[in-house]
Length: 114
Length: 113
Image (cartoon, rainbow over all chains, first blue to last red; front, side, top):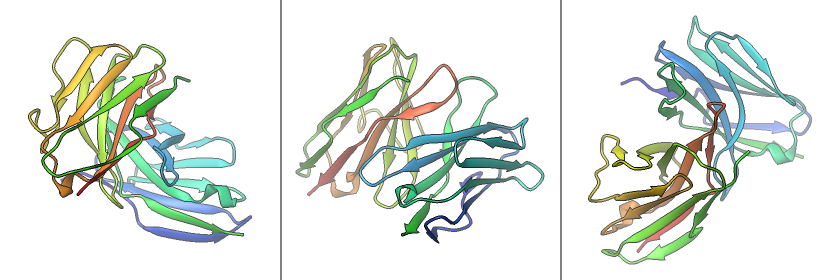
């Protein structure tokens, strides 16, 4: 069936490096994508989102890139810090309206070494 | 942004019993959602809860096992009924803000013995 998946289940980086977390999606009808960060014992925390009419969106230290041609989504974290260590999930929403069900990818564990 | 809280934060329950999880949002929201996150897994939508109507369940989830209440626009409950060890998971409630962003509660970590 259609799904959102991640290329790498784990990622280890050194503090100060840039991190890139990837995500593939299969439904070309998806129109909205979100990255979440989940720390141990907590619920997912919204990081950044992007709509399908955009290729790139930047936030504070984070950038999301969307390549609709190959159905690929990535999250770039600049100057990664130990506090960035968490599980990162991508999610897609389908529907074109304000309500749409989110489908989550499997998650990538990011570990930042000081 | 709205604050969303859940009770209890965690619980250990015996097989065959039921647990009701509460979710409170500090502002009125139209739709609330309940997700399950099994150990080491991603999130799976259980059901959508609208105020004043029955919840809509996703494939693989049924009302008898996961009854949901939505008495007003700021509150919802999820009951995990007749629990088995396979129900051990984190249960999360969620809502959409006006900006389309979906926010999650801190989760309820359930262990069934």
